[in-house]
Each structure stands twice: as C-alpha cells, then as structure tokens.
Image (cartoon, rainbow, N blue to C red):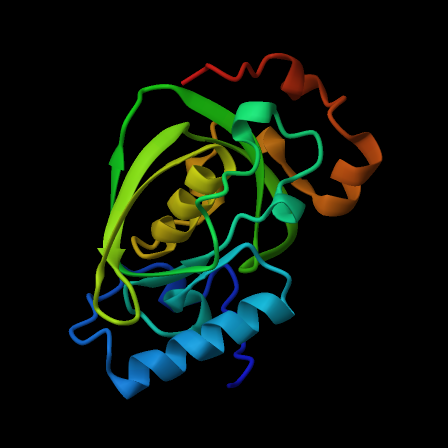
Length: 193
C-alpha cells in the first residue's frame, strides 16, 4: 500500500467527470482502493474519491464513525451506524427528501478550509463493492453528507460549488476561534433548502 499525493482545488483531475470502472475485481482496482484507504487514514479524512488521488475513476471510500462527526452537530445529523468503512464503485445517489440541512464540511483537496453546505437529509445510494457485489443503502445525517460530498468529486464538483454563500467559507483556524457565533449562522435554519 502507498500513501498517495492528494490533488488540490484547481488541479484538472478534480474538474472532470470520472469514468466508470469496468472490472471492480481487477488487481489494479484492488491496489488503488488499498492505496486510497491508506491515504484517507493518513490524512485523517472521513472519505476520499479516486480523482483526489489523481485517478479519474468512479470510486469513493468513506466512513462515518462517531468520532468523525463535527462538534456541535445536531442529533439528526450525527452518527449513523450503517456507515462502516465502505468502498463504493460506480455509485448512484437517489435523494429521498426535499429537506436540506446545513453542515460544515472540509475536504482533503481544499486543505485548511471549511464551508457551510446544504445537503439532502436522506438519500439512497447504490453501486458495487470491491468484490463486484451490489450495495444499496439508505443514509441520513452525516452518513448522507459524506456520501454526497465524495460522489460530487466524481462529477468534478467541490463543496464550495454547493455553498449558498461564500461568506460561509472560512479557514479552520477561524472556525475554531469563532465557533457558531458567526453572523451568517443566525439566518441558517436546518430546514432551509
């Protein structure tokens, strides 16, 4: 396994749609996934998409354990036990509700920054695992947020493009300093779409 270099915002690999994986069980894909897991763990990430490690393929990995849920997260946006470390190949997302929730997101490709991003509160995702077996799960809260964030990478989308207001794009150091007392937070409701 190898820790790979993570592409940063502005790199062309992050701007293009990823290609479907033809053989999820191939040795090359297994090697790539092993490298992605090692890279995500080393970078302390909750997820990683293949384009982030310079491979324009439809592969995402993610996990939503309780220790990854951002501090101050609402109860319905918190840990969902159905999100163990997951490899999802050629994923598809179906949004199950019009309800959106705002949550602070970061990205290994946008280091040092956080943004307040609206996401669907419930989704269904499907795809293949590393053995080529079908996966289909419903997700809510942080689990849904992580899956949507990672799958956006496969469409060439970074979280700042999903934000309603770039005033809510901040450095992590400022977020720790000011917490939730930012003026723009006052007008954000959990149900706002």
